[in-house]
Image (cartoon, rainbow, N blue to C red; front, side, top):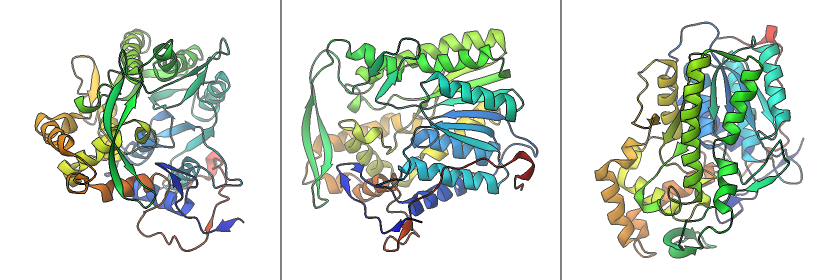
Length: 409
């Protein structure tokens, strides 16, 4: 037992500890927000979610379990409790596994480097031994600072930089007392092989490697479908995002989808798509200059009509499973961001952006919501949690139950 009171101490948007009770309650809320299942009774499809513990990958996992009744595997890379608490993703994974077991969903969570072939071997063995040797769906949701190439051992590092020229933008920060400030920051442009390095980490290379690896083991079911989660975003953030180094990686991801779609159509009658999701507060997005300000202003314009990640991933699963028609744009992408990029919405956000200062920001953006969302990433600011009480931090990684002892609905 390792109980202690956990306070939300942070450096900017990065928190030093996570709250296990808050993370568990947050996962409960996400599960409860999923509409009733759309699949018939019986064993659901087998799915692999790569990047299952945070952001849209977590939403994909929970929506898949609660809406579609998926079975299968979640892969993530989280830190165990030790001198500090475990990472938030560690606690969220434990909570997701608990709910899955309660609802009779057979899912195994693996903790390790998704870029490495050792993890691919482990997943392939599990699919063969536990899940009948077939995979119906693969969701790829990986945001990482670096990647080691399994063939060469070369280490690539991703960067968030504009291309060609420096980029100056407004950004939102909070001072030591929690007061909001709107500042200007300038980011130097990409140089050397920054673009190639970022594409090597965040592009489609590893996604395609996963598909090839599983196909070579004859593990792709007829009709196998895969989706990589992506983002385009607003013209206000385009220079640092879609037109920057990360945008080059997203373009590579989309080109990979087209290649995989043609290949899977010929081999297993399947398909590959990218899913363009809409803005949300995530651990990855808060690191991008300007995104915090943009998201707070977007919430100020839309309020509760913003569609949260679980709502978006329910829509994606409905389309992937045929509960709703697959709705693709001209480039073969599922677009879950149309409400965000509607011209009237973008015009309203742009107007607020142009007048946003430290003096006006509280009138223009929903900062209470934004601050709460950042805290919730680490299990804080979750209603119903007593943060004055000691919490047990030594939460074990979930061990799958034996197949014949699973709890069923």
